[in-house]
Length: 375
Image 1 (tube, helix red, strand yellow):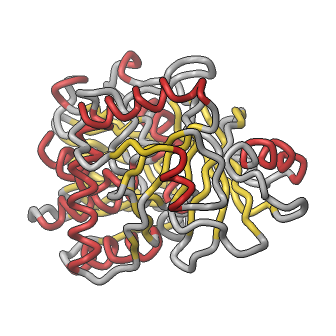
Image 2 (cartoon, helix red, strand yellow):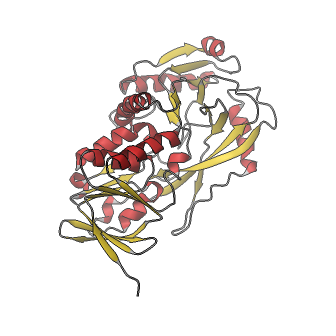
């Protein structure tokens, strides 16, 4: 018979992605004895390390939404954090490009939405001005976002982990929560790993990313009405074999379910393109297929040449992919972040985080503060 050990701890965070790490750090700095449970063997192996690493300005999101507010708050907090700790990042700016006159109305709508969100440095420029900045572009008009930047996401997560651990926190890797029961005001987490463990805690943060709905569905006493259905939108990336043609990030006018195949730069100046949108099914108990199919490159060439006509044949190579943790199905508008706390579901001490896709990285410190405030 397997021996089951039981421990009591002040707070437990499920998931060691950027949101889980930021939330755990906030709890530990507030004096909570905090443990992070991560089913993989390292931090940030899923959505947090498989994205464009962009520090977003807060342009696209509906006014009054959590995405809009937390992106703006998070951008300021993140930039201050990165500067104060001398972590790798760069404020390179972004151009959102209309490649034909039919897109100019949408470009104006984006500018209006950005200003409604409090993005006060967005600037509408002509095609000639855009081409003067980036001669390789095809542009009828563009929006310039000077406050958009890039960050080394892994360095940032390592810093969060270090500060969390310095504050007395711990991370348990290869630890998966299989069931969550309730005893009065405590959660009892049944955890598999090197040995089977039960953890007692009064504070539980579900920051499991792609798997947050699945974790929530394993919670005794949580009404299923507060657990959204998970949908998985795979985003593929291709890298550029030649020198980057631009110094700014280049985004097309957004498309359904994403921001279009954009050109971003990493901290070394290497250009990469993506993500596209590929809806996939992930069966219970299996992992997503992160392989990038070479044949998807044809769609990338077509999309990129709308704003960079001189993209050479054979210049793209499959790079990596990530999965967006969607809570709305294909064909529906992207949902807002869902931060579901006691005020929403009635379970004291519990916060579930659902649908934390872009701009989650940018908003991470603001989300962490919001989570701490909900408790």
